[in-house]
Length: 90
Image (cartoon, rainbow, N blue to C red; front, side, top):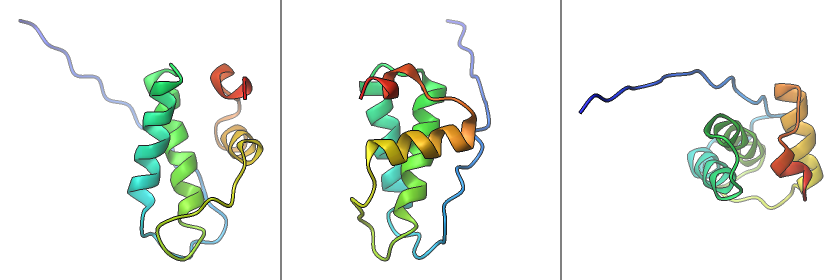
């Protein structure tokens, strides 16, 4: 069977001040899987992962719940210039 591999770069989502990188990958994965669950495109899901990971590194330790869906939408827009319709529904 013929298989194809596609590659694309996802620009980083710049956090405010970086406090601790513990859990950044977990945050990325949480955003990616949330995006896929919401039927976002793979590209938008990866970008959402970058957004969530950027919030995680702004606090000490691996967990943070200090952001709202409005914060996510704003950071997504500031980083990528648009808000996916799946995020606009919340």
